Length: 312
Ligand code: SF4
Image (cartoon, rainbow, N blue to C red):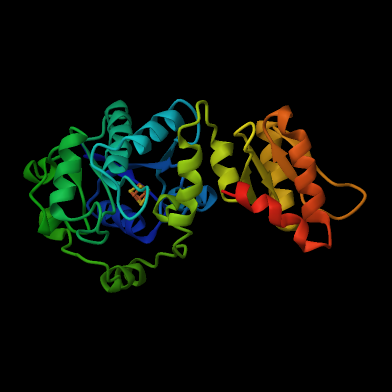
């Protein structure tokens, strides 16, 4: 019989690392896919670390980069009008999962995978991992019965791979909930090293999403515009309605300069006296940008007050 083949959706976190081990024990040929999302995944976002693990396990790793076009625009459109609504902030988790699974499905078909496997754990996350959510997401991604979730499989309907005996259901697990006890035991058993969870998904952060909402309607957004949201003080000109961003400290000044190497907006970098780096897109805002730079370089803190009404 031909060796079964699966495509593992690999975030780099412990759960998807365990999935690789569990399926390898069942002699399933594996390839993995890491889907890089513009706002983070709530897990490991370190591609080098992800690459290392897949290499050590002898698995081919594919990277689908949704921070680049055309996927970036597709992802932004999904955030603007999610069919299944938002979670605590601007996080359209169900639609986001459908997006991820559809991309994985296309790849799975290309590499002739018999099924997809994910590290999802039943009821681990409130907005997308209850049983009804998992089933809805499967339907919307046109993958009913084709996603194996080895960590919770025994609590979920039998998948096609299990029915066809490509995978032994008995050897799969029945983990549910947010507790990580069982996963930590398994990490010890398999001697898996794993990264501490990274910053999480920015779409769940209210303060960040306030700034994101402000630019979401702008045409032609680039990934760098998203990166800029996490850096500096943001102002909007009352006259031109354009944005001006100003670094809060030396690290942010450097970060702004770095991001700007790719987008090439207008930039002011004070050379003679210490002061903030300022980025602005439109030449029309040069005067205001210079005023901001002078105010934020001055020791007289009262100078910045008049700009507070423009603050986003
Ligand atoms: S938290 Fe939700 S929106 Fe963010 S990456 Fe996860 S599923 Fe997507």
